[in-house]
Image 1 (cartoon, helix red, strand yellow):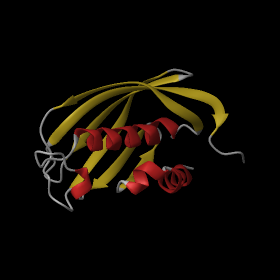
Image 2 (cartoon, one colour):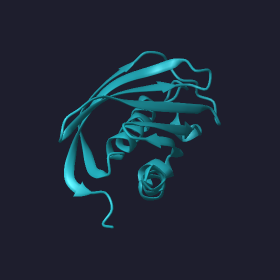
Image 3 (cartoon, one colour):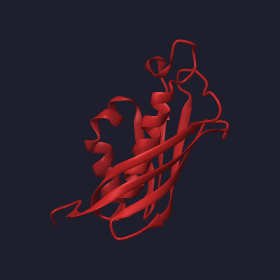
Length: 138
């Protein structure tokens, strides 16, 4: 089932796809997503844009949140930007989401973003709402 959800998200999240992001690992309550940077991801001072890192964070969170097999959406996010990411085309940034707590309808995740030298760049705590609607009809 996790392979199907991973493919579904990579095929249907057009914003993530258009911005060079892909979910690379998914299991129940955990995921990993990767961004391969290009010049469009850099801000005016030549580092990776905080919004690009937050979008990567949100994509990994969405994958982990939907890993339970039901349609789910974000409710709250708190992100700390700890270090700047390099503004180098081809640089890879990895977001790892991990379940902290889950009830019947809500789940809380830690999501960290690392650069290609495994330096922690951002830390987020994100909460999502899990609906009663299955992710797939069959």
